[in-house]
Every structure is written in structure tokens, then in C-alpha cells.
Length: 505
Image: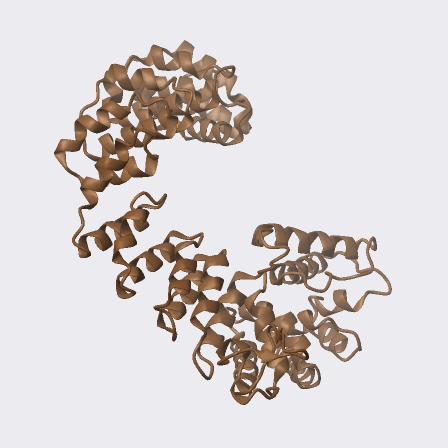
């Protein structure tokens, strides 16, 4: 599926809309958001224009129609709707306007646009209509667009419900074409194009809406096509809709459908495919999925092996002892079986030369609440594999009060490995008191953004009351730490903390 432009995110789209509004207000741009801009771009654009104009900002003269359509005065918005060239997206926004005259005129204009250009309007405005449907006066546009698509879908059989593809000249298959059962061209090809475009729309909510609409249409969905879309989908909720349809459709027990699901990106889709192997009489294949990277899929594979009379635990032990080297997911699966005789095997893997295997062994021991010496875990804080250092720090959390804080503080040096610094900081924060504050102040200028943000949040959350440190630090040290972190506070906040320490403000 071609989903060019996906991944910008609502936050970035909203920033784009606000920036375009500012350019138009300053006279630096002559156009509104480009065709195909996301719904969040249009909503942010309209809100920015209205808020800035409401704040007293003068509009350029002559004001473009897009600015008048977003003007805070209702009579200006209503008059702008009567002018030609109003962007259909802004007309859609005004169908939810608080002023009844504006709202009624916008709805009448939207009705005319839907009748005159149904395909283009549905494709362009449906994602925005779904957003507007959440508003207090958004029921109209949402119901109108749903009705328009459902009426067209009922009048023609969309391509994904057809018994087979059409034949192009020369005997070749015409992909995506709509035909009737006798091979004739089906009416309503525009409907198929609209829904097909929405199924590949970059907007996640529009795709979910289109999938539900498509699957509720006439006929039955093609199982293999649904499986392919489930495997290629980037939204978990939409992938789940396709998966359910693939397993419920005719031919779902065929090998191709299940194989496509098993190769999907999302664990829930793969798990559904693995579970479906039993219904297809292929339960023996469950062993090949015991070491899947997802715990959900591994659990389904163990169930499948058990249903076939196999021993998943025994297979895990064989995988872990593989001379070619165990997979970290096989190690995780062995730990998930939860048998006491596996503890020694997991302990031995803590020294494995492959980092992810060491990390999986540590996680498995922690899952089983097996005792690992503090000295072993402390040494693994310096492991070159970040996943190992992380698991070692998690294993040390229950023992944090008996650890030497100076040993941990030595590993906060900004010149050291980031993963060691983060693992150590996790432990010192868990310990609390003056050791946590010292560590946080030491990292407020760390080069890593997330570590720096966490450290600054910890410093700002500190109450800076001498009593809270229970004799661990004197006022002089606290004053020095506060001085080092003074830039994190405004004048009032800094003065408040100095007064708590008994310092002159």
C-alpha cells in the first residue's frame, strides 16, 4: 500500500496549519493549505486565523476568502460563504459553526458540493468530517458523509466484494476493476474509487471508517485481500478489523491467508494467524513460532503445540541448547514456561557472548524471582550491551538500599556510555534522598535529551527541605546544588527554595 506522507503526526500537522495561517495573515503567502493536507492542518489553520483576528490583528486588504471564512465575526463568515472559490474543507468546518445562519448556509453549500462533485468531495473531506463529528454540532456532517457513502456502496458492488477480477483486452486481468458476476462492468465505479482511496488514506481514523464501511457492504470480503491489508497496515486497530475479516471470509482456511497473517508486522495479527493453524489442520507448524519476537505469539504457539500433543517446554530447552546459539526469544519463551528446573540453565546464559541472550536470561531470572548475586548484577551495569545494563538495573531495584551509592555515582560521568549512565540514574532515583538529588543535578546538562529532561524534572520536583534528607546532607551542600540548578527556576521559585533552606533571598 502506498501511504506517502504517513507519520507526520497530528502535532506536526497542527503546527503546519498554524504556520500557514500566520503566513497568510502576514501577507507572505497567497494560498491556503495545499490539496491533500491532513484534517489537523485545516482545523489548526481555521483556529489560528480566528484566534489571531479575535485578538485584534488586522487582516490583509483585500483579505483572501480563507481568512474571511475563519473571521471571528459571524456576518463576515456568512458573506464569505456566498463567494466562489471557498475551500471545501473550510466549508466543512463551518457546518459546525456556533452561529446558526453560518452553519445553515455552510450545510446547504456542502449539500450542493456533494451532489455536484461526490467523488472528489468524499475523498477530500471524509477525514475532516470524522474529526468534526466529535464536536457538539458535528452530527450533521458525519451522518451526511456516512449516508452518502453507504447509499453509493449499496448501489454498486465494490471491488473487494467481487467473486473475481475482470478481464482486460488480451485476456489479462485488470487489477482493481469492478465487475458484476457475469463479467460485465459494474456500475458505481466511482464508489469503488472513493472507498479504495479512503482505505489507503494517510489518516488513521479515515482508514478505520472506510474499513468498517467496506466490510459492512454487500457480498463477502475476499479473505486473502483482507489478510494482505492486515499485514501491511500500520495502525493496530485497523489491522485488527482486517484480520477478523480475513479469518471470517470464504477461503480463510487456505494456506495463503494464514501465511500472510503470520508474516504480518503486528503481534496480534501474527498471533491470530498462528492460532488459525489449528483450524487449518496445520498445528504441527506451531513449533516454528515458539521463538517469535512477541510474547503474545509465543503464548499462542505454545497453546497450539499443546493442542497437537507436543511438548513446548522440551522444545524450548532444545532451542536454548542449540550449538549454533540460542535466540533471545527462545530464552524468553523458556522463562515464560515457568519451570523451576530451568533456573540453572538461565543462570548459565547470563555469561553468554551475545548481549540480547544475556539480557533475555536476566529478564527470565527476574520473571522467576530467582536470586542473582548483587555483585553479578553490579558488574553487568557496565556491560557493553544496553539491554543487559537495563535488565541488571531492574534486577537491582529491590536491593537498591544496600548498594554503595558512591559506586553508582562514579558511573554518571557524561563521558561514559549513555546506557550505563541511564541504568545508574534509575537506581539512584529509586534510592531517593540526597543521592538522587546529586545524580539529578549532575545530569541537568546531559547531552541526551531524555536523560536531561528526566534529571531536570527530578530537580524541580524536589522540595528542598533540609528535613527530607534526614541528616544525609547539610545546608551548605544543598545550597551548592541549588546554585548549580538555579537556571531551572524562575525568580519566585528560586527564592522559595532558598527560603526553605534558610538562605537570604
